[in-house]
Length: 476
Image 1: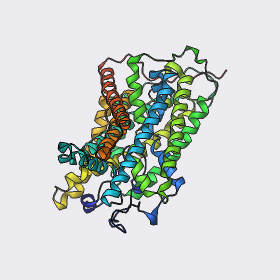
Image 2 (image 1 turned 90 degrees about the horizontal axis):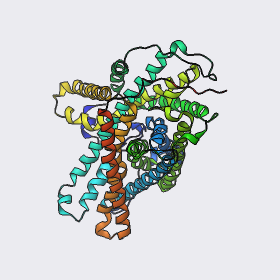
Image 3 (image 1 turned 90 degrees about the vertical axis):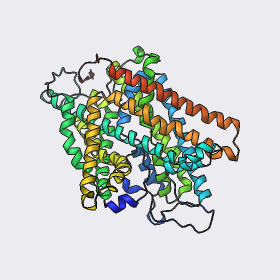
Image 4 (image 1 turned 45 degrees about the horizontal axis):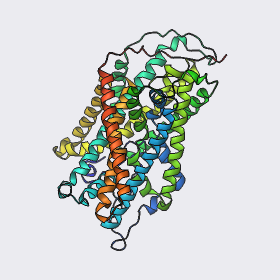
């Protein structure tokens, strides 16, 4: 990736997606046929409705999905799926708001494409408040900030996920068998601390993010998608078999753990930044609303089913990632390794977004002969930063909940409704729509505050949880 490109290329918003950066909106088309016209470009290199649906699905499936069984435990077997359904409906509604506002500014400003940050900036410029209009450029900065926090938070989650899964596979290696149907006691062979596993992955991930060619990253994306798909099929195959009696599971969990549920749930649902690039790349963008709502119905059903079935299967023993509960036989140990491989390669794709925001700032200020060195140095520092944060917060469930509460809630729930108000208020809005938007933002803000507080509170408390021990149910 050349320095000139880093300096001149407009940043395209991917948010927390696993969509390859190669699939960004086309560049260089700045002229439309007539003033005031509106059209999405990319005619020569567009995606079909099916390709767009696949990108939407893969962009919402990651480590957050595997943490949903524990999230359901934190909400209750009844409250959990109901809350997931409500959060899914609200999140999709906010995606629709963002697309609508983006179309509005494309028509008004005669632009072929605006990303999330531009849409917020233009929305503030349309605000009836003079102070907001004068500081509209901060809208883009706020979106960029939360994107950086979200994406680097994902990278921290990946460090913890990789360390926990590899640690468990290695420690159980001596007791791993080919028999997946018996409930055998497995004595784990103690190895090094999980934080040392994170340090072991550090140089490998540093080398991975040195790959700056976007087409090379798309190859990694393909490998990640295949390995994660196979793993998910195997996980479902296990958790649907002989589910224990759920009568002992609480319908509603104690209110104190509900904020942790919110953080994990919104972490999984936060894919709002991907909708504009995907819509822009479609060959027939008029079909995008149908793709968006249809795809999110599939994703919500997947989230609810895995969350409920995982909690029903493992009960109170459910861990931060459902992979840590799989049996100690080679078949399911391979599932952990496959999903870990997928997460490893996905790290580079998630890292791409903060890199495209941060690195140009430093490269543009470096002497020309040092630009490559500065580029690689900043990448190394950012990877080391995510590793250090993961070491400081080695509990996977709390990392997911904290990232979801802090940044995902802002991007997915708080900003879009406020954007709709600033965009359309001067053109006339019904009081019902204003009240609806204010309520969604308020709920998102409450979740942001309470979820962040509860996650931080749990982090500073001494952990009474046992060291990860795999729990295998009997198939008698």
